[in-house]
Image (tube, rainbow, N blue to C red; front, top):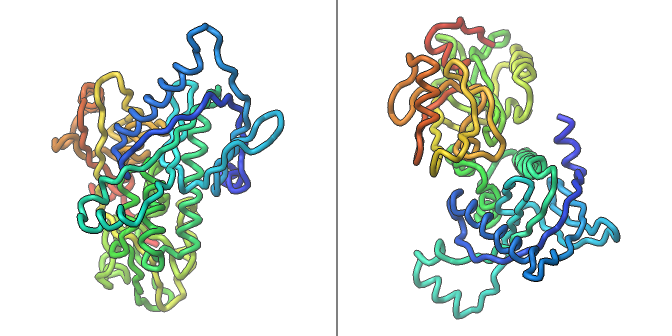
Length: 382
């Protein structure tokens, strides 16, 4: 969309810069710890801004520049660059009311002796502490700023995948893990996508004039890679005959054309257009048809951040605990905490969810796929 285009060149928000503070952090802390770190940073800065003499420290008016490459902070008056972080070094972004916290990783200097100590104990690596610099800003657009940065990540990640034709093997482990660390604001989808064994090129043989024989549906808004999923296969059609495709597989590209981020109708048109080919090469990410969701909700004060209509998730709050847990718009909830809710009335589902705390486990699948599997809808194969 137009928004994604803007992000490539960059968009600018006005904000007040309140200050920065440094924290030590594990390499990949949990989402809850990240949020606590953000709150800790805010409380440290807030204490500073309200100096004891009652004279608030001057705030600096800044322009916050966000693009798929970097996040820059410019002094609003002089337009001098105060900070410049490549997007991949940003670990976390939180909006708390009208406050935005931006956390960036700093490289820790390491001596040779330290290197050897670490090498001798493989368990040490995950315990290594990273210096995180936390910048705190205040803006009426706090939520929009956080959303835009989230969007910049997903646009950048799609560009990255397109540019590399999703072949993680070509990347050094180092580059890849850096990329994954950048994305720790998302759920584990990314880790699944990064494992090359989950990513396959498959060649489907078929006769010219024969359709591929699949039904595709959208993966659902909120998935790390918006693309289409195989929801059904025509009996004895080329797709089923090949034995190489499974329901739930995400299609990244067909005959070299990327489907990532395209509307469903466009993807359908692209696949229909291959009817006269004698074979189709698909690039797939193997995914189970059912999405596993884990929402960590410390207590009832935390908004779940999504709404349900007739068992289907119809809206999702950006950056909320549900989005981080893997909830997707357009998905049908199949079970909650190992209990099937397929035949459960709407009110009861809402009641179960609104009163649930701690770890909430759900299984969901695209509603369109669910309707096909339960024969509520007749498949239209392409």
